[in-house]
Amino acid sequence: MSNSLLSKDKLSEAYKRELKEIRNIVGNSLEQRKYTIVAEVKFINEGKYGTSFVTVFDEDGTEIQMKVAEQLAYELEREKTYIFSGHFEVGYSEKFGALQFKPQQIEVFGSSFRTMQQHIASRELIESQYLNKYKDDFSSFMGMQECHVALVTSAQSKAIHDVEEVFKRRQGIVYSLYEVKLKNPKSIATGIFEASESGCDVVMIVRGGGKDTDFLVFDSIEVLQEIYNSPIPVITGLGHTSNFTLADQVADRCETTPTKAAQFLVDKLGQYRNDTRCMVRELGMPYISDKETMSHYIGSKTNWKGKIALLIVVVVIFIAMITIFTKYS
Image (tube, rainbow, N blue to C red; front, side, top):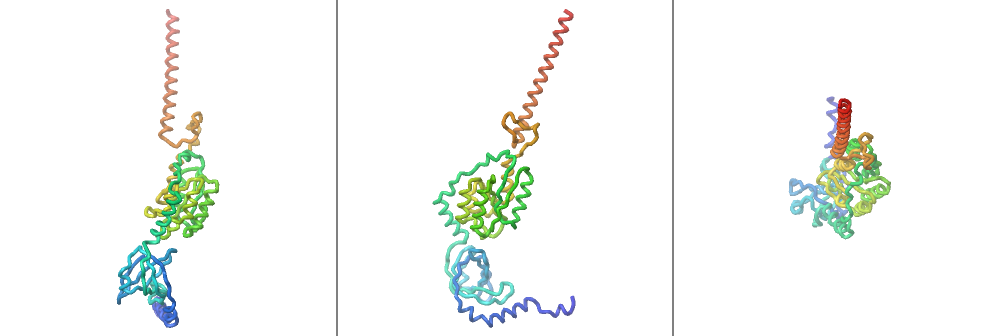
């Protein structure tokens, strides 16, 4: 490394100097501006000199660090929501950004954002009887030659790749992407409505894993209404095993991941048999989805043909013996 490079200012030192300069300029002005913030506690780190550093986030998922006096931080609990009243101040470290919030008063507001929203939505679900929706058993999908899926997700979602890989295992599955903003409940609701009116066979709503707050949108009433009102079946595959939402409860079928949602559809469709030697048209069965049943059926026909052939041989031998007996008698 060159000597000129070693002589340069370190980023952290330059940052701290600038923060100090900002404090000198706007410090008193920031203290005069009071804010009341409703936020959920994510992490509590006990610091030095009677101060705790508390990471919180609001309903939209925006995170900030608070500088909380020890006597106030003592009552705080993770995954609970509080009303913080105080002001912003310029920070002292590059690790936590330029601004920190310093509360002078804290009041308990409730449980986590997700829990509170689910309670509100659950009451409306029960009152609206959304959970009484007929759950499609997908029996009509068995053996379909083609299945058109309306895929509702973000265009940047990695879940699309996971779903595509599963769909490749079964010919005849095509999908149309209905792009939505996965953090916007109105966008998701609109996407579900358009997908359900598209003429496709099934709606599939998927997204990859994320923070608990990322799934709050799937507890919103507008999203649940569109799932409930969909004239075609809806399958959900949202996040991972722990990410269970109210949308999962309203859907016709919920799976714990996008991959499992796609696999469920593939399994329900079964195998489409395009081989005329194996098609049982006289019984109205152009699609064979149960290999065991097909093997049994083909085996039964083979045994039946074998018995016919054996009977013919026996008759021919019998006629030949009668002819010989007549000739020499």
